[in-house]
Length: 257
Length: 99
Image (cartoon, rainbow over all chains, first blue to last red; front, side, top):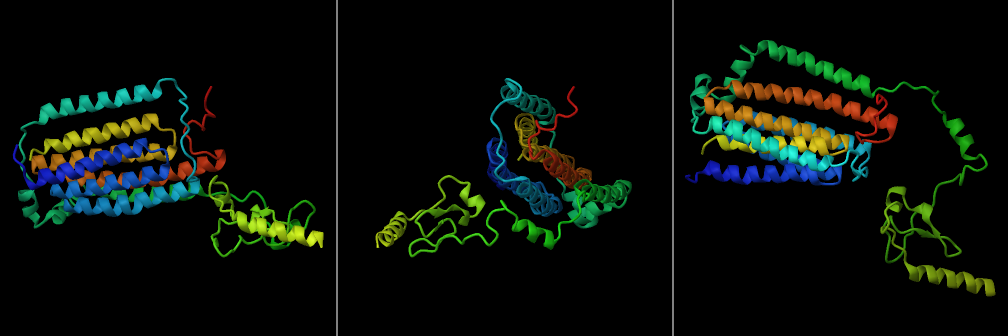
């Protein structure tokens, strides 16, 4: 086997593609999966260009990493980033059988198609590209002649998909809209909590980040002052114990006076 | 370089995608695995186009991309809608039609 430039590209990009695909399946968090699959898409685009398909490579980057992955990330943020997978198997042995199935499928496909195609030759696309003056022109010629009907059907499909997404995510308003007056009344109801603004997070000489809870006049911490997403993480609060003890000492001193 | 290596790479990617669909529970990751399988099929189309010296394969891959984009739009809309009613993106959650 001779080493040519394409083989180097194939080994690097193909390896990164497989690593990305494995990372996508194996990572616990959905955001990591999304980033891994973006890596797969970009490397596949490079492989398309190496396969003398520059147009498809560009479309791959624009459509997949540009549009589709942004849509995926957007929905991930809507659905909740922290919704990680449960590790409990609903069907016993499903994971093992799934992996066995995957390995068997890979062996079967690679064996079957591979043996049928080895030494089939490599005609190359130079002649086909030359015919109309380039890759883009050649594809355009096919789309607007042989595949014209499919192209038109594609237009209908895209419009239907867009409409379908709008209809699927549309929500009828079952309740009348809450007005500002009603909101204000509810705010001052008994049991509705503190009617004013929540306290700001603490600002001190050494910590002024948003994860520093404010200290109330009696030395206790106002956990309300830290935003909920920050508070829900276990190790995120920074509490300056020296400031707390100083406040407590001052309060006690005032009590004694 | 023999273009059959691209076919081998595509079969590996397709199998990883299939395992992802079977094993993962998060609907969005299952969806990404489907995308991976579609991309593997596209790689096969592109490699075949080059092996046969014929641009038809690239044209078909282009159409696959369009259909995949439409599929993503509708699928993610369904996931968002299921999440709104069930507060979960797990594919085990929607079981109303069971029994």
